[in-house]
Image 1: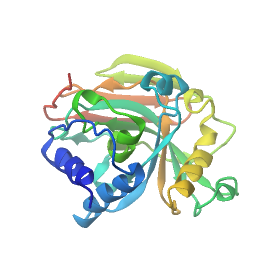
Image 2: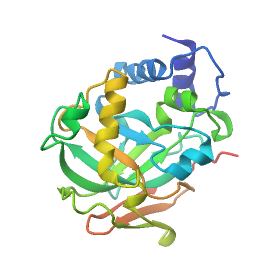
Image 3: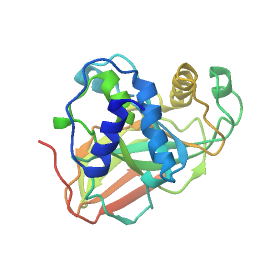
Length: 252
């Protein structure tokens, strides 16, 4: 177990940010160790998520590639539920397209095979860097499991690959805060399954049938305020929502 994985796990459990590491660690190996600690406490893997799927976000953060994180059942917030998020450090929320994986994905060929995506849903991701001031490099955010914190999934519906450029309305407390399109995800969200397969293969992972894939944010993230009601509606896919029931710590 690396010192960085242990420090990130401690930061997660105590909601106490740590300085960004500069060198001396393997990003995806540290991520694996971090998730193994959570699995040892009884959590189970539920899927994966892509990060930096927006070219603009990559430019903003000074990174050059997508990143892959892992999701567990403890990160899941029920659709429409009231969730205690007081244990997060500086949480932010963003609207997502969520895919249900329909077959075992361990190569790029699998991603293009029939049935790779079984269903689609609107979703919300809650991100929360464990680093001070929400600042990180590409390697350090990978080690921190891509800032993954929680997610909400709306109702599943049949996947129609022809429906990829859909309008997105993102609301907090009933007020629109972002309006966008699912086309902002990789320029075409249908690319998400292939990109997830590429990164999984490169890092020695397999995406199992029944896993969920958070395909990427359709708009910029917004800070999550105490007591906020968060809702995303995606054209023809429906909506997903949750309420932050407890006080949250806001980053500076």
